[in-house]
Image 1 (cartoon, helix red, strand yellow):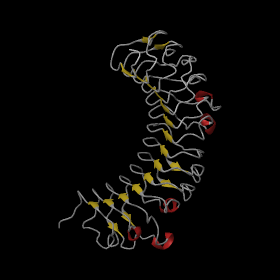
Image 2 (tube, rainbow, N blue to C red):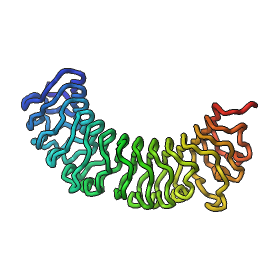
Image 3 (cartoon, helix red, strand yellow):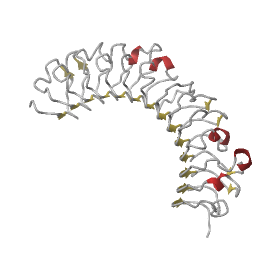
Image 4 (cartoon, rainbow, N blue to C red):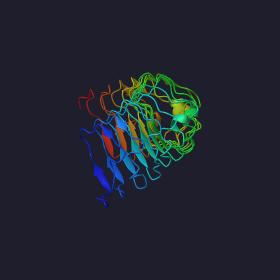
Length: 338
């Protein structure tokens, strides 16, 4: 089996990994051990595959606490490590010392409640690009110091499902492109919170408890294209905050917000306000009126518009007169009669 490159042992009853378990597999690149009962991993378990292994899946096991220095034999070619659903509580300082070339780390659905402020938990992960920490037990966002090893390399930070997390501190990730903070309990986005994330393209704040955004909440996000605000408690769209990303924004999801109208704010934000939107969804709101002089007049590039489950009694034809690029219009489940 020396030529084997892919090995899947998923959904078995394996309880541990001894030192010589992977002998004669010196060409192995992908190892899938998902959904077993692994609770013990010897420090030299991967010594026979440490030079070739690129993708290791240990998710959905019972490895509750990463043993000290679990990757004693360095695996410099390992690019993706999945450790989700293991009941992991803490990350030791040497947990990832042997996998410093890691690009993707998944730690979702564990019981982690903090990361050491000195960055020791992620020590050595200077090449890490994608970090998935969703559905853990963080009551506060890890400090910037916790990410110091990968601060400059991260392009994706995903932390949805932190139901005890109600505040987002100022973040600084110069190359971050995707930030997912959905399904948390955030109530407010302060001014300049993300101003040091200039390359952010996707921001997901859906399903929180946000009631308002300050005028500079999105300041500095000059590359933002996709914004998800659905399932929050806005009484009206955060126009001042949106003005900060008006030139770059292409997609706005604003369903389930409790909006009652789309008013006329064109005099405040100019004719080009949100003029690059190609996708807009305002469904499941109590909208009864879309002002004919609203920002809809600027949406000449809009291709998809969704207005399902509102309180509009007819198609807002006047407001839609300038939607010259519209290709898809969804107007389901509204109280129209003709």
